[in-house]
Image (tube, rainbow, N blue to C red; front, top):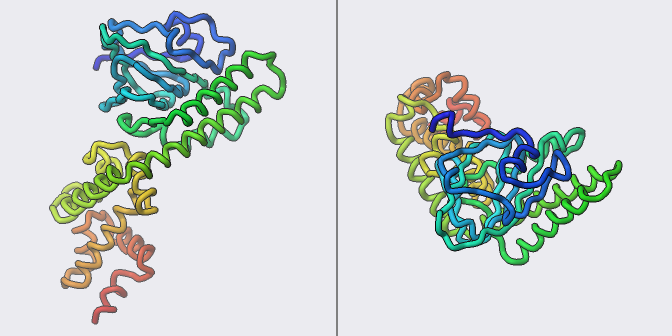
Length: 306
């Protein structure tokens, strides 16, 4: 991908111009009917970066959206979220025979100034999810989301007063919280898939911990494990939180401690040697983690077997 293939759109007004739309009613927030957007197959090789949030619900896209190295599947109604600064590409089929429908809500970060949402919006993990795990909605859920989007549109179309921002912020928070609920439901209803991910995680971690990778590459990171499983770090943590109540980092640490207990109880290696085997640069870091997880130092744990 060359720089010429990446186009950055800094404002919502600029987005409207690039898609052949009328000037937005509000400079910092806009709800767009997807049927009105002009998109040509000639733009398939162009990747985009927005300096604002995009919350979209699309049907019959007649193509693919590539988000990083992954793809969204738009066979059903799908909702997805893009944060400022993230790269994506839309590839439209030339003769799909489908008429795309849906809505796109654009919100510039400046709209959140002096509101709690300025900080809390970054906590909604689905903005960073691996794209092939976009949010699938039931008919009722879709109606709920579209209703909130249209309430937002109605509010910024009205005469702006001192209450307008607070009302729209409240609607945005409701939309994000419903999406959070629906994502959680998606995790629960996809237990079989999620358990397969958990099983693959266990295999990957065992392979890593039983090999020389710990010594050569150091401690496994959340990013490296997620990449090995072909999911995003946030998605992997979401799955583990649902199934085990633990984050990926906690899961990795617990496996390291299990390995450490095994080495402490079955070998005569020193604590420093075991620390080195497990990929820690400093024995003190290993001892500190072991103490946090077991309430014992490595030496105290070993003595309990004598």
